[in-house]
Amino acid sequence: MSSTISLESEITNLLKVHGSLSVAFITRFLNEMGLDCTRQKVERTLRKMVEQKKVEAFYTNGNKRKHYRLR
Image 1 (cartoon, rainbow, N blue to C red):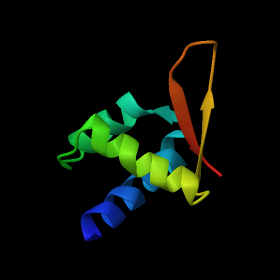
Image 2: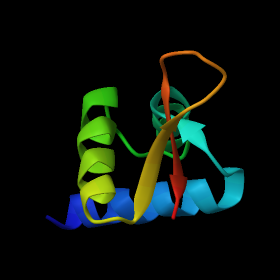
Image 3: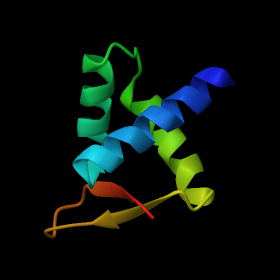
């Protein structure tokens, strides 16, 4: 449970610094910081955060990639 909470806080910090990001960039930045996580784990955590209304998902520039930003 605490790993999920720390992952949420790290994602929140990344979104504060960089603004909106896609799952690929969030995963890349987390791995560069030393957190061992997969894209699927990041997507699962982001879905929970969207349900909790901490983060919002949107599409940009007509591509089909979801981007996430803080509410």
